[in-house]
Image (cartoon, rainbow, N blue to C red):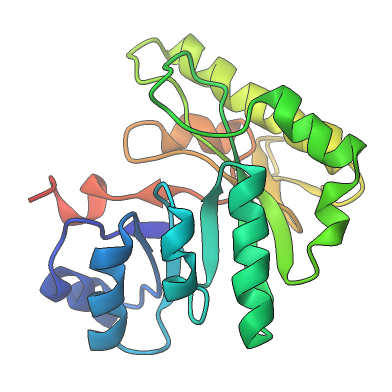
Amino acid sequence: MICVSKFHPIEAIIEAYQIGERDFGESRVQELLPKHEALPKDIRWHFIGHLQTNKVKLIVPFVHLIHSVDSLRLLETINHEAEKIQRKVRVLLEVHVAKEETKSGLSPEELESLFIQGQLSTFSYVEVCGIMGMATNTDDEQEIRRCFQAIKKLADTHFPNTLQSIRDNDGIHKGYASFVISMGMSDDHQIAIEEGSNMVRIGSSIFGERI
């Protein structure tokens, strides 16, 4: 579980930290940097928002996982900045399956081209750990489920050798052992888990509404 701490004060993060949470998610570089400086260094910072290429160098030295790689250009920039400091950076490829055009991410076709053309193997300082995606913002549970199923299908298609399905005693799918599928937030994480998520991003259910 990633505690989405964006727009919440340092005091709220400290409270969650004191009860054992270590994974926190931020969506703006200008907010993440002072929090990283002020808070304990064993926190694992996840960048979950749209990342501008000119801001990459600011977070590459310490970020634990970048969830929102939505273009080849961004991937190239992360690799370039990581090479400068000789650090391998873990990333997720953000995919766009929702009906809303405002959501960012690689289309299924763009994702496929990365694999067909073998481009991922050229990035020596980037470790692609999985996929991230969001469902359509709707009350229609079937549409939400369809989005998560589409994300899982992309994972199954492009990373078939790394997926290890985990199921409980009742046969309910619990996620993957060696491949990250980051999907599901406060309102839809239960559906996401049922459909294969093994990393959820929870904000308002932990910290309350954004300030």
